[in-house]
Image (cartoon, rainbow, N blue to C red; front, side, top):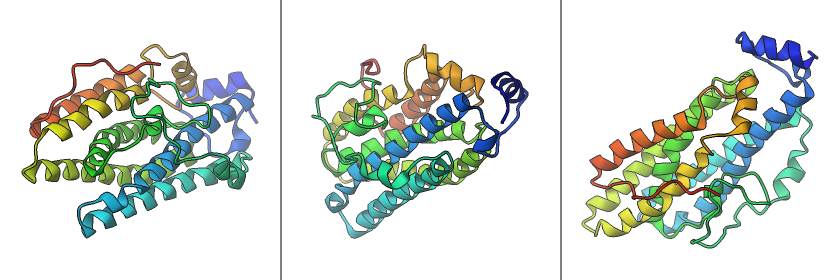
Length: 260
């Protein structure tokens, strides 16, 4: 195992780590935190979306929704296997949290996580109906793709490799969400409920990028786990989302991202 200074110099030069044995305790802690946020978010996201399967308007949509839930649980399992190499007791880990737990619809967590687990705050809000689920999948799917694209370049190579595969599936999830929103709009129904869902979820998804001035980002950057800042990633998501919504004749709400 390297000492902290040697490791930071190695990572600063673009080095990659292939095993927990090569990492310092601080690096191990940051990678574990990094992975736990992802696993908890996938577990909570899949558990919440599972309730929407029977709300889908047709058999094809139900099959797609069920496959999405399956894939998200599978993504969590893949990263949990990496966490086991760091000593995590994954069986106890999974049973320790209520992944389906949700707050009230009008709760205001901002970018703060709950006390139960490390899921992103957006996964503490309940989904109301199929169209609402599709809007969340559309908006959060795009955010996830941007965030995982960043992770796929991280300094812990086994995690980067896993994320490359997961990224492809998450791109499909985002596309399916957009397709679901488009179908809802083309069904002849009023745009107002879909726009109301955009108004609700947009600031909550924006909050998942974290605060612009983040002390923790600097730690991630030093360890090669992140390169672009929260503000940069948020700006990229906002630009893509505005363009995509405009094509659907929807718009972003006139509100700032929620902050805790």
